[in-house]
Length: 181
Image 1 (cartoon, helix red, strand yellow):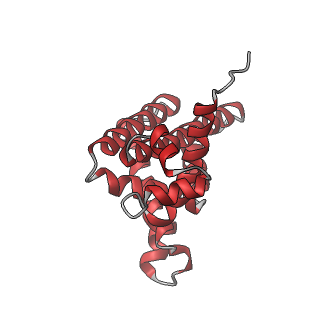
Image 2 (tube, rainbow, N blue to C red):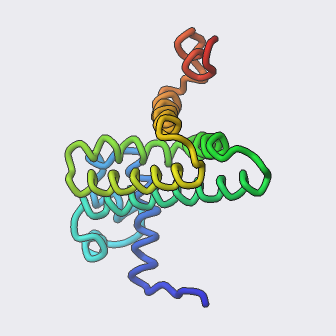
């Protein structure tokens, strides 16, 4: 049976999609709710009916981003097991592909930064990160140290992508991108 979304639920999803693009461009703190309403094609008043505070909207965007990452990891793990490949490297490759989308990368980075000053966003980012930790640990069967290294490498990927390090002709960039250069 296919779940039918109510008009409000459907609108909330559309607003989150529109907000992702605006938040990616301007950040959580630098984006006005009026800009999100305009991008979503709704009135400012209706935006606040769907999301009573800007923080609740930011939380919904962060949760959406984490859900997308979780689904990407689940799909990559399933394909790796089916193809007889190691799961952890498959998750890493899937993550690198995921954050090659500038909108996804920027929303993640803004969510991490916004979590430093917004309690609701901090809780959402913690919960999302915990879910990612759980799936990586469970589907990979990797040791705690290997899971920690996986997440550390993921954060390094975020920074290198944000810096466009692939275009930098310097030892530090080559080493961090490729190992010993």
